[in-house]
Amino acid sequence: MDKLYKGLKPSRRNFLRGAAATGVAAFGGAQAARAQGAPDPAITEIKPWMQYLGDGVDARPYGMPSPYEAHVRRQNVEWLTADPVSSVNFTPLHELDGIITPNGLCFERHHAGIAEVDPAEHRLMINGLVDRPLVFTMEDLMRFPRENHVYFLECAANTGMEWAGAQLNGCQFTHGMIHNVMYTGVPLRLVLEEAGVRTNAAWILPEGADASGMTRSIPMEKALDDCLVAFKMNGEALRPEQGYPVRLVVPGWEGNMWVKWLRRIEVGDQPWHHREETSKYTDLLADGQARRFTWEMDAKSVITNPSPQAPITHGPGPMTLTGVAWSGRGTIPRVDVTLDGGANWHQARMSGPSLMKSMHRFYYDFEWDGRPMLLQSRAHDSTGYVQPTKDQLRQVRGENSIYHNNGIQTWAVNENGEAENVEIS
Image 1 (tube, rainbow, N blue to C red):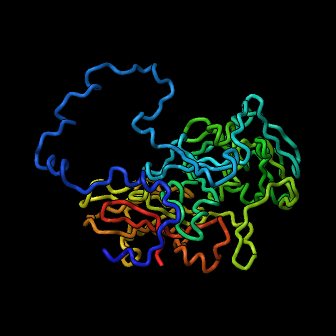
Image 2: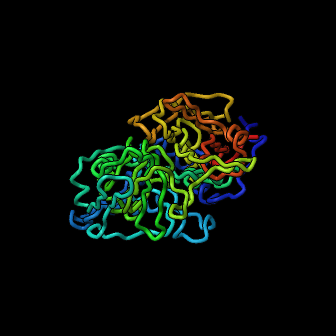
Image 3: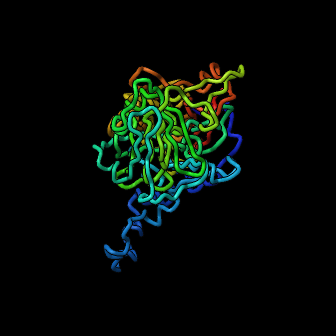
């Protein structure tokens, strides 16, 4: 495996390179001494927190993470856009486990910043090709039957910087435009049925209440299938940055269609092409043509540990590799991982619930011998689709697009346990 680095293309931006290496050391020294029975002050000495009373139950009315976890946070990339009010920040995937993203770590994408909406003054209007144009208050919406579903939300531009080659050194930045939460809401079909959708209706145009007036055309078939008008995530009210007090949930489809701060749904007989609708995302091909209506998110996966922001710190020996996989078309029954850049593949261990259009957690337990590795994961979804390599995608689509890159990701791990974003030639 010491020959694995031949033919690698290292990242062009060693993003967080220094931070990734912090704390990496070979097994030995104090660790070896403790393993041989030397006293460990961490267990033999009395610590301050063992000697004094802590805060009472009324000191922290809304619970927050430990101050020792302050590094676990969303981050943006300053040079990505001209202004953060129309930008994105990234979920720290390398710090998480399981499949549920905590509300405070769900990535954000804004077109005009966060709208601070008073729910008492907020309304949802249904108009267009309906028998009864209606306006709902939040209280009205809460009277409908509600459902709970766990779904991932992924921006179409997730991994978009990687089309032309390895760019950002950390899975938070390559794959972090995604989160996975339990949404509580009303099936959109119930709201539309209340208004009486006419027989010639074929599309809806949801609109947001933020300053961008975000709109998207969505086929009626999808609207009546599994879309939700959601007002809670992971049991509590939506966060303002996630569309409080109400947003649209479009399971398995690209995140720009999940209109936040939802205020209006117009029903029509064709998609909207005039200036009322914000430009749709399209996938520009090598020959200048563009793929349109590429809404579904293809099967995808990434190893989150080890990775550039989560190096191996314990040295050679037993270790557990982990990551997440997802598909906009179903479940993920299988993930394969490789330690040598695809020469040998091993079936990972799936753990936790297997839900439609949701993240799936996988693990691979092995003995690391301390030699370099080339780590990759490959997802299989329930339709039989297998996650492609980046080169396979490029052969079909070229390198012009920034959307819908679901190619296999490679991390090169050196003998010190440090990882880097690379590509294999």
